[in-house]
Length: 127
Image (cartoon, rainbow, N blue to C red; front, side):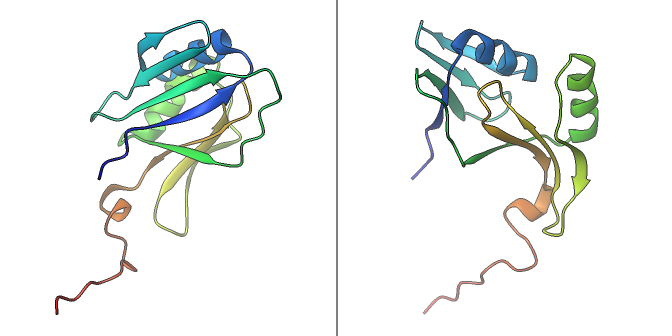
C-alpha cells in the first residue's frame, strides 16, 4: 500500500496556491476549485480543495527537507512567517512550524534516519 495524496481545505484557492508554490512545490493540476502539487522529491502529491465554510482542520502535514534551516531562511526572505523556527525535538526530529493561508498547520522538518528507525522502533520478530 502507498499513500497517494492528502487534500487540505482552503478558503482562498489562489492565495493558497501561491503560498505552496512559494514553498517550492510544483503545480500539476489547476482548476478553479482544486489544485494539486507534486513534491520536489519522490512521487508524493497533495492537493487543495476550495470550500466556502471556515476551515477547521486539526491535522498536521509534514514536509521533509534535509537542508531545513537554509530552506526556512529562504522562505523567511520570501515573506513566509513561522510560528516556530527550526527546533530540535525530543523525538529526534528538527522542526519548523507555520500555517498556510487557511490556517492548516504545516511542519517542515528533518529527521534523517530517525524518521523510519527511531531508537524506540517496534521490533518485529518472525515466527
